[in-house]
Length: 129
Image (tube, rainbow, N blue to C red; front, side, top):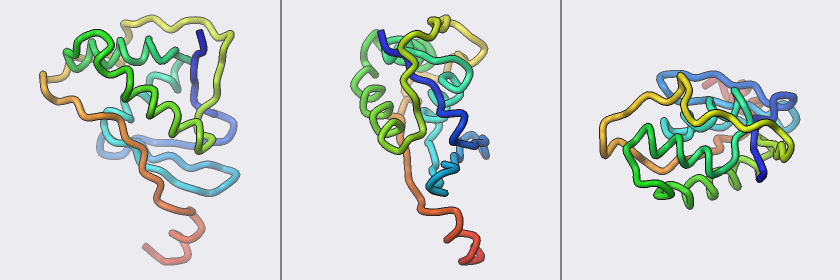
């Protein structure tokens, strides 16, 4: 079972107002994650997880049926990997499904995890925004 973790050698990130902001060192591209994406990012930054484990954590947090978020997780992991933000760690140890990152949210609070690419950090700095 493949596990995925943050590309710690190439990305820097911080959570601001409950949403992650990520910068890729090589491309200078910067990204934003919604709250669900941030929940996933914090989990995989702590320990590599398989898509099934990520979906189980989402189910526990948001009160979803098992497997309900699996397609969303697969799409999100693909988008992170496509941007070089994620690494596959096939031989990494399994993460526990329960952790301090799993805090139950109100039912109906789930939104599919989303990655937004904003551009290059250099352009942002030069624009003065």
